Image (cartoon, rainbow, N blue to C red):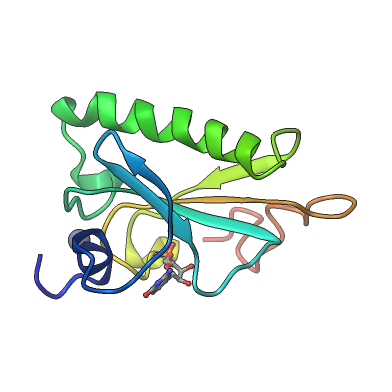
Length: 123
Ligand code: 5GP
Ligand code: ZN
């Protein structure tokens, strides 16, 4: 997609150091890291979000999880890491090209996961 920032990264229009480039998937550092290690793992093909995933994407999705594990090892965070994806604006998605955040590298303990304002199943 022409106006998609992650498609531009995939195409090389925006110079980016890839931590991974194989299996139809690339990974690169997030521009605004929220953890000492914060890598985005994305399919090269444009998929809006998990909402738009099809059965034929199953292998791709499996590979993303395997690559997350391999990158966690490469980055020295294999003992403590998280993999997150947001699907939909209200879920916090801001770039509408499927991506998984691989985060880790905290010194002691990771921040609590579910401490947001709406964390208690508020309506
Ligand atoms: P979301 O909010 O959709 O879950 O995550 C989008 C992520 O993409 C954000 O963490 C944001 O910092 C990152 N991001 C947005 N634009 C760019 C960019 O041009 N380059 C890189 N490396 N990351 C970006
Ligand atoms: Zn895209």
